Image (cartoon, rainbow, N blue to C red; front, side, top):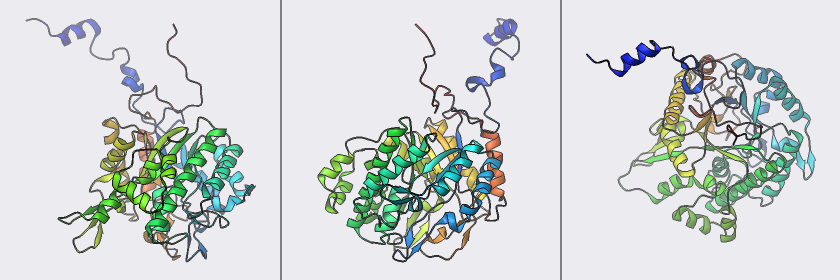
Length: 445
């Protein structure tokens, strides 16, 4: 009987343990172990919840950094990030406290926190505007916002030249909608024209801020965090209102990345105060630096609207996998899962693993997902009512509670990081690195 090829291989080279087997294939490693901080590591992260919109017609400032006592306990909180085994942290410098006026800055707290982050070897993704602006700027209807914010971004980049990762403006679409369409924060308007005004001012602020960061850090990596949302309309005939709303979720990223805008959305913009000149400015090109598209996904992001108009949550009907596929196919940017949690502490562990399954599935399909974030490090307050009133109800969604005691989801996240902490940024793609080293060729002529 003639030998098959496998028999010939075994006769010639033995039964396994061939050259290279010990290195775990293309990765040279199975991916387990805590992150090492090498440029090729997938980025596991958390964030410190830091929202600071105004409510009650501007009379109350919600500052979650103050309400969770982070200003007093920042060293302890940053130590928890290290204890978790994480190397990456979404972190906000409170814009409304630092930028005191044109050319005027108060760096006292920022310097202390940034020095501790640097000492601990944590890589910050600096979040520079999180749902609010300084009192002297007013709100998002102010056309001077892009100029003032650009000055602030440039000042941050100059002061902390070692920082490479930035989120200039967190959730542009949510900021504009909550402030000018839903009427719950800041200017508290409920008007299409106000919404488009806020949208163009905030997006322009992000672009101009990005420009200034790139002046001082040309190799900056911009991780845009945007909410992935969808309304499932359970009516036989689709309504124009819901159809438009599902299209508007893309508007901030369309303007940011100079992506061709849907005709219906374009007409809506032009009808509500966007000029042709402004639109041409947005469409001129995308901002500098390496652009990563961050998708935030919570089960409450998806909603079902019944025929009678009532809403119910549609958790995981599409899910992060399907929704992110939509965004990726539209913009073709590397992806970061920039926020997720659940307010039900009993469900949190399962939700964490479900989100990680989504990340693994989409990576296996070839979509370059470079990071994952459980948001946030600590429990939050009043996010069940989107901060619209100051009730100080604890939302048990943190890796740690407000006494800084670890929650079961925190233990689960530790387990995940130990199991997957050294997987590569892109599967089997060691040539792709976020590094400050100059590019090198692997071969010489």
